[in-house]
Length: 245
Image (cartoon, rainbow, N blue to C red; front, side):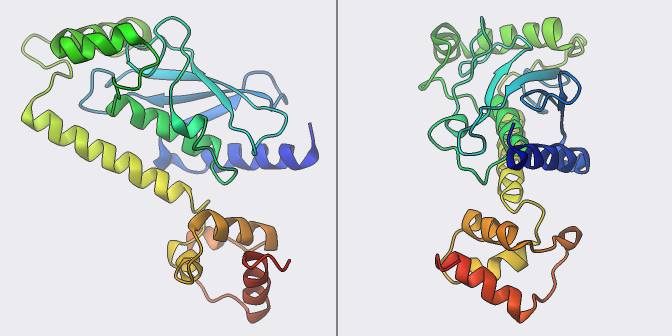
């Protein structure tokens, strides 16, 4: 493995370990083998997957981060965008929408958010998608059964819901989806203070461009605090953004 890719993956693993708020974890499956990892996260609240623990098999391609990690669910899950047989995933973030500024953490957060926002019209598992469209109550029941059986989710007591759609649960799901989107947006900043990055995005550059320039120049994250950059650094970043460095 190239030294650049090794440093990148080690940094990403350390970043996940130091960020409990992301609610995801990852570790190598075998000691010192950074090409094969396993990620974990909990099922989102107010969904049939709530309380379950989900494991993700992660394989790092040779040209990462220019190609996305190859991810699949090890934990069996009943979801239209995840194969109920193989755990294969249908998600733009892991294919056409991948960018080198995205990370393993942001991909895992996207998968967690996917559990809250199934897309039956763009399925990985047609049978599950058909059930969700034609019989949503049956879908909710089956998804919860699988969460209990395969992901260790607690059984609901009599009278409790099982992730079924109610006005309150729909509102909570919408809030959960928004929180997932917010986490993804924050993940784009790679630990840099948003205001610090936005001084450059206000010039017309997008967040991934600015973050990549910061990392190229070696800007200190200062634990996410805002601060004034030295003039020399400002020049280096601007030159990088305009393709002059």
